[in-house]
Length: 450
Image 1: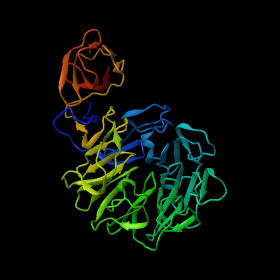
Image 2: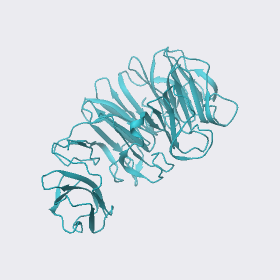
Image 3: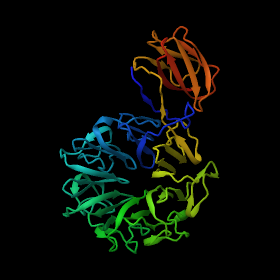
Image 4: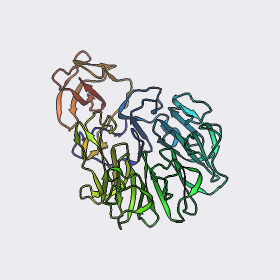
């Protein structure tokens, strides 16, 4: 027996209080991983190429424990593949491998993690559209996967299935795999890029593809790049100023125009502490803790989810935002109290078990249960989804039940009869079932009524 932290990943708490449990979040177009304060992590998303790593290819629209979560220092997601660094410094990948982006010497997809070589000195990794870049502890830069736009700084092949060193330099500090391009920041704060440059998204002042790693301008104060999935780039400098360049469709550069920019332009005069770029939209947090967004979230069933804006627009009035992340057309933001909010297009990617899209941030809470719970993984419910009767397997210890909907309303309660619960009075949707022992201890299960 022990008190446990139960993460109820519906958008509303069963109780009238919630406590933040989210440390940080990473995401690609349609795959998301949450890092929790207790050291655990959870992942969900489209999974069409096995990006979950759990040997499936089915959509996962609610969070599940990240595959082998106890092993990883860091997990991240590219367009169709996932990457991770093990606690022992080894590198692992899984998902789509059409052009060798898994780096394991072949082009076979893998639905479970596979090790990349045998080296154990990897320190950072960034998956791009169809390629992957990584750093070693000696400051060297490596890459593999698609090379059709020279994003790997290699003229030998259109794709590379094993890690190759991209530069002889040993002072690389940060890396960013983008849309057929790669950015890297050196220890001296200089910014470097290579690859496709159709809309000036490398920031060189023209739209010519870069065949070699090239310094972008002469500034030495670059801090962070959000190398978006599309043809534009958002960046922060060490003084907190915000810069953007590339394709400006829907005003996603935030400079008040829709004019493409082939060189970095400063966005306003404010200072910022975090930014994230989606496909056509950007979200950011100013130094004062306020949350802003611009660009476009697209149209949902013929209706514009959030109006386009070519200038930053404040989201709400709160001033305690800490960090942000962006998916294809979805947004995530964490407050200083470690609570997570999500909004935008929801093709099953917001993690609430539905496809409902949200125009405004919605709380994605963790609920701390003060009651004594008991761990008994042998007690289960089936079928799930359920149409009429919910069966309880190994229920000899269970005497009663309560069922709540996702907004915290108790819908039904009763005693267990013949190891079954009649659910015919429930409307279609997601519910949480509490199964109680006579001493008040309980186990919970989430299920869907259809």
